[in-house]
Length: 280
Image 1 (tube, rainbow, N blue to C red):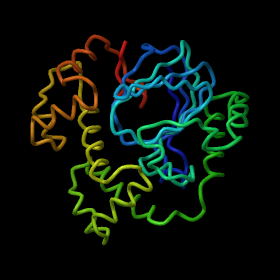
Image 2 (image 1 turned 135 degrees about the vertical axis):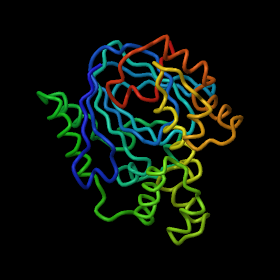
Image 3 (image 1 turned 120 degrees about the vertical axis):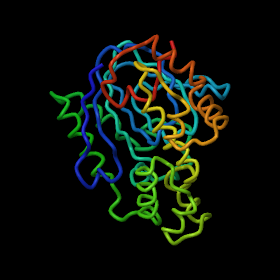
Image 4 (image 1 turned 180 degrees about the horizontal axis):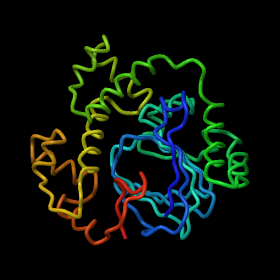
């Protein structure tokens, strides 16, 4: 598939990693996505997408238009349509908070129709995106909508969460949470409360996701992988804990994960190809 994306202009770049268009025929329809340090907005312009939580015995969610998805703390499955025309936003973990007007915990480990969050606006956005003649124009539409919805005054505690979250991001989750609270001049309990409100998870859980993301994005399936060295570099110093967390986050052991990528080699052309793995 073809990925066209960009980091949005300020002030959106404080909250958004990238806005993007994804088009074409997917190499694999069914994908298994481990938790990553981001939240999402997706607008699908062609065909329904199905999503599952494999750890819960529920029916797949089917979205023909658009949906929001908060930070996930475990893996989920999604199925592309036969042909993809998708517009998306990769929010930073705290980045959805100024745009949706509801507690981040309401979207943690779940998804919600875009119209349920942004009432009666999805059709307008889809129409404008559908009329655009280039990917750049589509991204302009998306940035304009996000800018119009960005709250003028940050919610209480969001600036502190953003500053602390950037430290977690820079350290790939290896900075002690106690040190983050001390640097922010607040108690650990207060920092955890603010993170739950604006991110949906505690700083400790967010650190785990950053640490895992660093590891998983460092894997090069085309070469021998020293898992012990890779795990230690990412901040895992207990091999049993690393193995257990890897299985929880991917559904595979490290050996199984590597074998899967070697079965399905291919170029990683954009963020959509980093993290999710074929499940078919």
